Image (cartoon, rainbow, N blue to C red; front, side, top):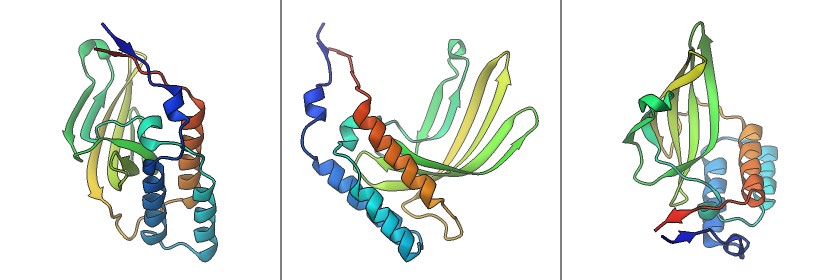
Length: 183
């Protein structure tokens, strides 16, 4: 049995090509897909310019972006992920909730912005239902792939997107990750 640990030295290396590709695609998505004012465009450019040196492939966790996810009651194996929406795994950059309804169960819907492993940015529409049963929470998430475009009528909060991505970059550089792989 051999155990390998992700090297911190590798994480502290010079700016990677992945970071440049991520920043270029993020800038392009933010500037071209949304109609922002000149002041907001300037804010986007300043925020991206302040990103620290990081490698999105090494520093962020990626998972399959699935059309259906069921979570809860691990002892009954209710952790199900089915119907991959994209060929590559993704990292959730931002989730914007549109509406919420609650009586016994909580139901929400909205849009998500994902970064795929090839550094492309894609969007999904989601609907999530959460229920508490015997003190434990179960959830069902349904996602629909929108691809690289959002419907024109969708408004996304610029401040929240930039804050979310900036915080994820900041935490990626400050939380040491160790991965143990048994070979």
